[in-house]
Image 1 (cartoon, rainbow, N blue to C red):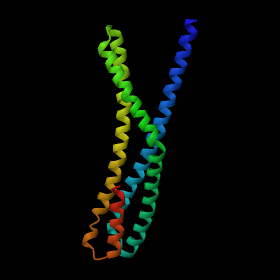
Image 2: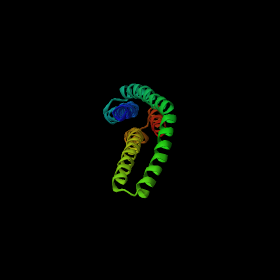
Image 3: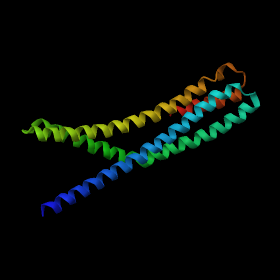
Image 4: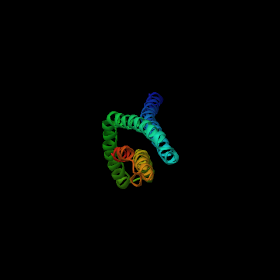
Length: 173
């Protein structure tokens, strides 16, 4: 009976790990893709300062349209993943509290090491979520910085200034 139970527990554990990892990898790869698009927008805005006025206005309209699509993707990602992330963080917090308590209160060194190992794994997963979330926020802020660096306030073109201001305001949300 023992080998059957051990095999069953091992399969269930592997299934849980793959389920959590799959969810996390979808989230992280989506955030990375959105970050890449924000970085592409930054590069396009930085290169825009050298263009003639008419072409610059046309290009900035294209940049705004693409930026809106990327922001829409980020909002969809937030809408889809916000509840699962909240549940995951809440469960990890409870898990870490119980693992920390058990590691401290355990009388055997072996159990303390096991609980400490699980605690480190939970902290690593929370760190990854925070890291990728911060990466997304930073890349969005860089879009606003790149738009501001265009020196739009020094040009006498009100239409271009409004377009750039629109990017700056939208990128800061």
